[in-house]
Image (cartoon, rainbow, N blue to C red):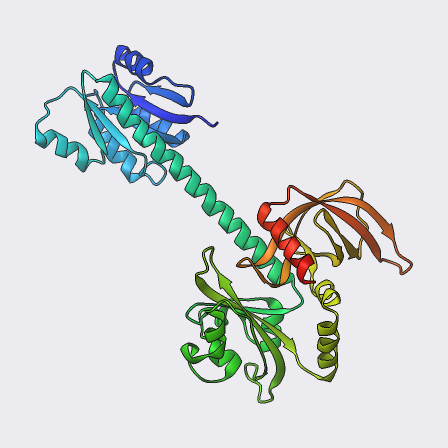
Length: 371
C-alpha cells in the first residue's frame, strides 16, 4: 500500500519529535519542516494528504503559510490543521479559518483527539485518490472506445437522452458530408429524419424502453439535394441499473446488393457476427483482424499481418448489438499460433484471452449463445 504523506511544521525541534512519536504509523510518511519557507518548498515538491501547521513561528507565521498555500494551484486543496498555543478566543480561531484552516488543535495536543482528526483526513485522501483513479480509468476507456469507433468501417453516430449528437466517427462524417465539430451538440432528428421532434421520435420510444430500432431512411447529406438511402439501426445506451442515457446509430447504405447481403446474414447469424466483429488495437485504433471463431477461452482472427506466438496485445471490438448496457468490449490476449494462408499477405491466428473480466466473460457467452 502506498504511504500517505503528512507535513508537520513547527519551529521547535522538540515539538516535531513529539508529533512524530504521536503520528508514526506504517501507512504514513511523516515529513518535518522547521519554518514556513521550508514548508512551502516541501508542499510544492511532494503530494501531501494533510498539513499540521504551527501558528506561532518567526519570519513567517502559520497564517501566512496557509494563505500562500491557498494561492497556489498545486497546494490550494491540501487540508490544513492549525496547531497553536495561542488563546482559544473566537477571533483567533476565525483568523485561522479565514486563511484556509479546516480544523484546530490546541497545545498541549491530546493524543486521542489528534489521532481521530488525522484519521478523518487520511480517509478523505484515500477516497479522493480512488475517485481520481476512477476518473482516469473512465477517460482511458472513453478514449479507447472512441478510437475503436473511429477505426470502424461502419458509420456510427451517438446521441444523448435529449437527442443531441455526442459522437460521429469519420465514416459517418464522410457519409453525411458533414464536419464532426459542427455536428456535435446538434439535434440528431433533423440529421437523420429531416423533420420532427426527438421526443416524438419512434427511436426514442423504443430505445428508452431498452429495445432495438431499425428502419429504412432517405437521408439528405449536408448540401446535397439527392437523398442517400440508408438502413439505420439504433441501440440504446443504458447505465448499470437500466437508466437510459442515449442511442447509438449505425448507418448502412441501402441498395439491392446490400439488401441481398442483409437477407443472407439474417439466414446465417453466425456468419453475420463474424462479418461484423472486427478486432482493433486499443493503443492505436488500427484494425488487427476479423473474427473467424470464438470460444470462452479464446478466438481466431483472419489478419493482414503476421503475429508472433506469445505476443500480447491490447485489443477491443464493437459488439454487433448492445450487451449488458455496453457497445464495446476491451480485453488483452496472447497469440497462441499463427500461419500464413495461400493468398499473399493473408494470415490466420489463434489467440488466448488473458485475465478476462467477469463482465467480458458474460459477453462472450452471450455472443456464443446468440450466434
